[in-house]
Image (tube, rainbow, N blue to C red; front, side, top):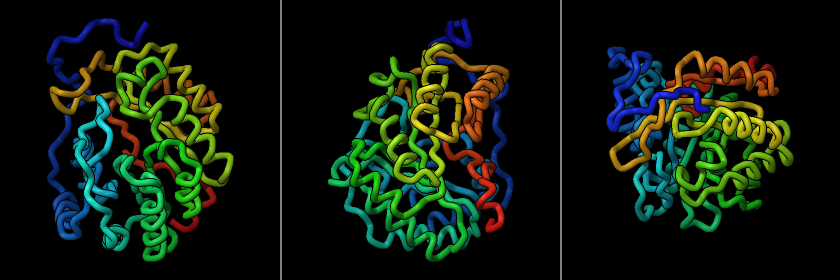
Length: 298
């Protein structure tokens, strides 16, 4: 059985726990202006994240590199699917400057899928990581990557820049993957995470799952176990929200108490850190996790 038994109406209303406050903090508008000034993309906007009001009000953002056009068309994602533009050679400098101005101690860098490039954009990831660290010594860098088609050279290109955290999302359970994801496969994503952990065991690996797409509790527990078997250290669990009418519909809303129960289960499985709740996203409150070995430099 799934976590919520009652079916949803065609246009389900958000439960009480999803009510959000609009921004009033000056930091929100300062972040907005900085992103515009440096002509940067953020996953906060492109993916229509419900938390970007809060994050920007706290002066944080997740930078999306390699453009705002994705070569894939996943059923859950609001990022635009079109022929991508050429990579911008000065983007590493602009991302680094943004992190400097924002005085970030933990920066999250993600990207659209770039299947049009031979390396999937991995070398660009490498350049951005290295430039950010050059401008901001001591910053903790987290990357959220596509699967790079599980190409060894691409994976090596990213981990050679030594990000502290390598995040690649499994997104959903095995049975729903063909419907939810485009091109990506369940086993390929597990392979990417396993390769990173094997080749660079000092890098923390991270992944995330969306709930409410029709998965059963048993399937979710199986996915969590598969992630642990791949050496995944950190886990995020959040409620799927339908970004537009064209995207996959919400099958159910998972109650916060159930998210809390899943968090306890995941911790018992051995995950080093688990963020679990309706509004949790891959990079939401990412800086809440500070590995002991990095604490002294933050």
